[in-house]
Length: 323
Image (cartoon, rainbow, N blue to C red; front, top):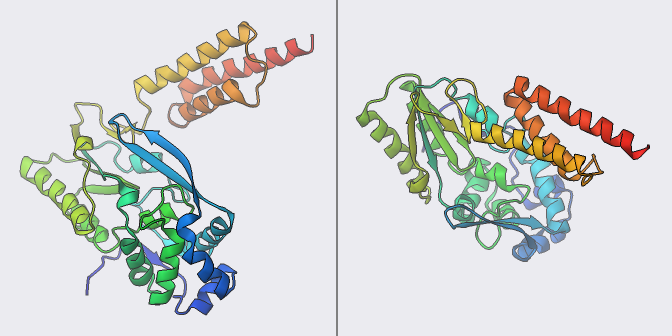
């Protein structure tokens, strides 16, 4: 039996021990549920294909309506009753990449690791293990839920239920790893497939090697591989980032990102002066305003003047429409 530390995710609702109980929980008949589970592999459309800077691609999937409705009920009636520890921050209510970065703000050293092909590597075996052993559901129930939440043997990125299950991929060993690091004054967090550890104290080379080996060991035990190209160690004498936010003091956007937002406002002003933009509720204006709102989350003083410029453009633009 594996001993799980107290700072672990846990399911706060009654266990589902029969297909009848599952059908009731998902508000669908037993027969309809089985039929849907058996054809779920073919009920997805490719939502997007993104090519990354390293040449690899990432595909996201969207379930068709009947399956999507059931997945929404799985999330609402089962997954939303999981209580997650603070070190898990990906795609959870009240958490985001800023929450994740804040955990490491003001550190002396930050180590970042990434997981190779995280969603495709999360197999139906891993997902079945989550449903049966983490949730404690009956085997038949776990098999049905696994079919409803995987696609062709993998966890489909983009599906309603996938990010929640991704947070539970390491439920057996992650709490023990986090507790072990915490006992040594080292902070651990995971934002989906981005792992970060940090410390306010100096870490010597043997300690750094041990920390990295511990993370790689956890990944290996669950059948994952680290993305070596994303391995990064930075200290406070450099710009330290976690989920692309600076953590040298409080989380902030990089200088390049701030410059990009200022440039976007300038280009928008020029386009409006040339009469190229007439709409303010969508398109380039709305997109640029969204960037300024992003800046305001981290640097409200810098964003204030840019927002005033945009509001002035909107006011003058609408006045010109009626003259």
